[in-house]
Image (cartoon, rainbow, N blue to C red; front, top):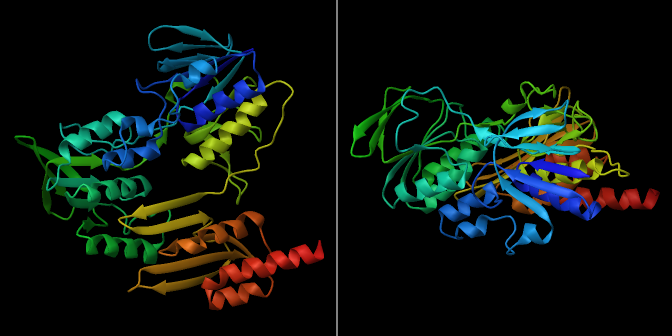
Length: 419
């Protein structure tokens, strides 16, 4: 059996290792488009703050790890897939045949339509090569403009703040991390950042970027203001890498369309990670969840199903994000924005930067968001994933959302007693 895994991020690495475990005699190839050893993008912020060296970002630290598993690691870019002949073509003209193929090609940064975005000194923060360039320019005291205050932008923000730069953030929405925080909590994060010395412009976009000479840039904002910078970082979102499938016949939508077994519309091809439009635990709908825990879970399920004689269903992943923004930890889970006809409970402590919002469907918590309350994160996630019926505890939580641990213990004991 010949297995080919395209994409050497967390999904690709976990999948290749699982394939080896389940099929010891198979031929397994792992193809990554970057010249680096397989690494985790989530480790890049630690590299930016000098907490680790480059090799600290590597997914597997043991020398010759893939060679010892007899997994062939190749540094190539797949340009097309021929589903009729079960083969793929790489950028160097090589043809690779497969019996089963896993697509874990991840995402790429969205390039905003801003004049001057391709100027020297403007970088994404997505690859190790990006990180190297940022380290060169983000010296203490340097002026840095960060375009985008979403999840990725705020991860970068944390690293830049620790590098002691003069940081200005530009976000087009009316709050920070708008896809995981509502108006109240998103603006609490904004105030926290401003308290830490970060200049934050919300409801603002960059209209253009000018080169001033000597490596200096000027970012002109939609408010009429301008900010001079030594470095501009674009973190305005990502998109799944699916362009190479345009003539393959594999069905794509937001990402690669899969069934409950992470199998694509071609029976020999599977998908995992940021590129996969997999099942959402809460809604049952198929969406792209570009987070590492989902990528790893996808990889395990997809690899298992690729091996003859094995079959496991993907029940769906809980949408979740946990973020540390200059020392303030925020989290969101599931349907944090609520559901039609649902109910909610909210606790707000503006001065203490504490926030908790619980979203209910009937007497079940289906989503939540929190700020500065890390001790409750695990319990809330457990209540959502277990779909625990709260009974009388719903009204108690509406009066005091901080009683989630009491609710969890009481409801768990009740379930055990009736089992």
